[in-house]
Image (cartoon, rainbow, N blue to C red; front, side, top):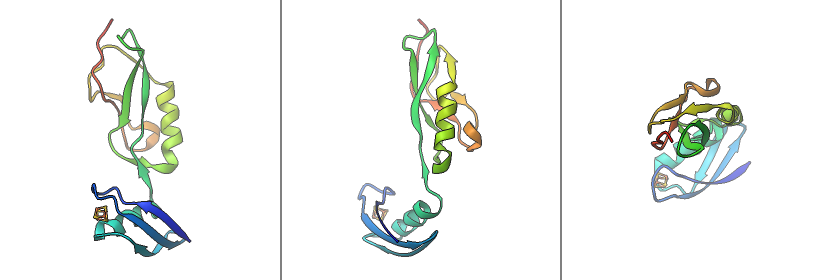
Length: 120
Ligand code: SF4
């Protein structure tokens, strides 16, 4: 099978064509360096993403605070991570970097606030 992807390992953003069978990468075309190959292998064998969203806030100047995972999580866990984020609620004040959910959905990643939020 063939898949088009963009390497995001550096700002150059090489457009690559990746040929693979199952989870074995056979050929990568379009990459300017070896990091592109590594990126392609990771995307085919264990794709990960940073998850961003918002969490409800009680007693804050805003009703939600933006959050993200503190590291990339396996793509198949994103739905479960989003479910935990959706159910979560935090009390103001919130500090940037504050852990809102520890080890969300057993992904190994924490959900952290990306903004300071004061009390009303
Ligand atoms: S293949 Fe190399 S040069 Fe191209 S985007 Fe990836 S890291 Fe950058």
